Image (cartoon, rainbow, N blue to C red):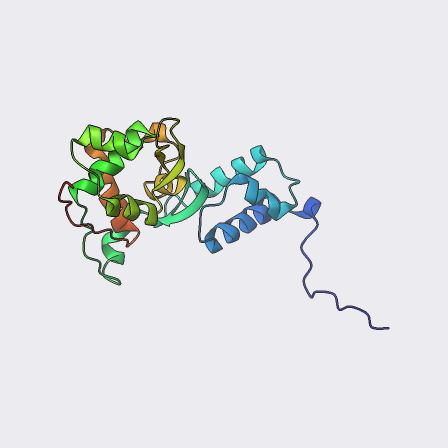
Length: 209
């Protein structure tokens, strides 16, 4: 009868973890993660035995620890993440030069209407803009992960209702829609966000049909 081999390194019992070790675990998880991690996910690191309040306090301590570095710990709509500071971007661009993202007026206006008037239908957008909305504009924003269909309006034809996503807020470093900037600042904020993440979205001007 074979005996299963035990792992060489067992995780420390939770009651033996010091605050410093707990912060190290949180840092490792956040640095390794591809996407922001909410408190509910971070609690799994400790078998859900540490409260959200305790983890929030430790995360704030980590944020302070990294405050003087080129990397910062931030909280966005989807949770916590590490990211490079904006001041570092000109230097990082030398490693991977990117052309500035270009947005058509149609894309920016459609996104702004959805962000500030959501949920809205395609007809709502067309009424506000006074011009038809190209299907490619909506497809582009959906593919970018910035908008999604969230239901249908209870009127003849059951048109889809569109709203922004958590990913949209994450890309703009926001936690909620209440933090959206004044409308006139939307374009510069989006372009800055895309440049910092080395992403570009290009869309030709629509014809109006």
